Length: 218
Ligand code: AP5
Image (tube, rainbow, N blue to C red; front, side, top):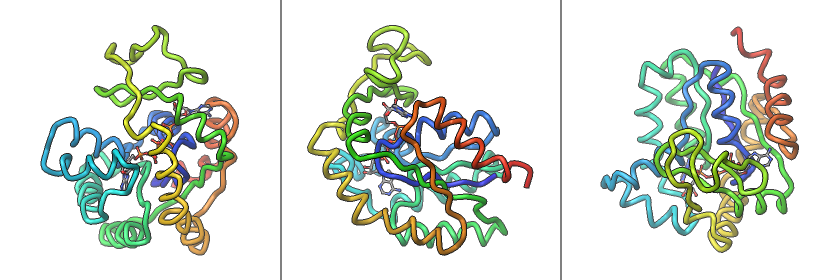
């Protein structure tokens, strides 16, 4: 199964991508996670990406496209993948189509996560993330077992620099201006499924599993 998760920042794409990847044994490709790893490792790419990310702006297409092409070439993606946070611009979507075609592959589904704006802001401003393993929690909706400590690896949880109010506003504006048009792009290609992602994590997962079930055996 080859799927893309589309939607505004904070709609829960990453949370569900982890669960779907585990359920269907798919590779999870999250450009946000890849970029944060590069920032943490202080690579040249990470240093270039950091200033864009801190402000809530998109990292230049060429950088992100390079990262995704590298990942898609990895054998772990041969059995299927879930793309979380990519594509986010028209050139990224075009490039993804070209790369997949060159491998005689195609997307099965693009799922558009929909959550009211006020809920998105609540989800983002309460998010706590593990810098080491990138697991995410929420101070109200998805609390870790021990306060401020990652359930998965035991590291301290922090608030992402782009989860401050000003950066959240920029990210939502950037989404409206540069990413929202991809909904129409994939709808025109008959690949789009819209998902009401406003319920609990478990409810959204059940709903999403139902949307993806027809594609798991292809
Ligand atoms: P990225 O990490 O992709 O950020 P994003 O798209 O803004 O998405 P988020 O990770 O903020 O939200 P999400 O939808 O994954 O929600 P989550 O599951 O965490 O990108 C960060 C930056 O990297 C970008 O701003 C840009 O600079 C750069 N970048 C990345 N990709 C790029 C690209 N393709 N091109 C250019 N630049 C790129 O959930 C959010 C919170 O809500 C969590 O606390 C979670 O616990 C909670 N939650 C989840 N589901 C529920 C639920 N059902 N109910 C209640 N709470 C929930």
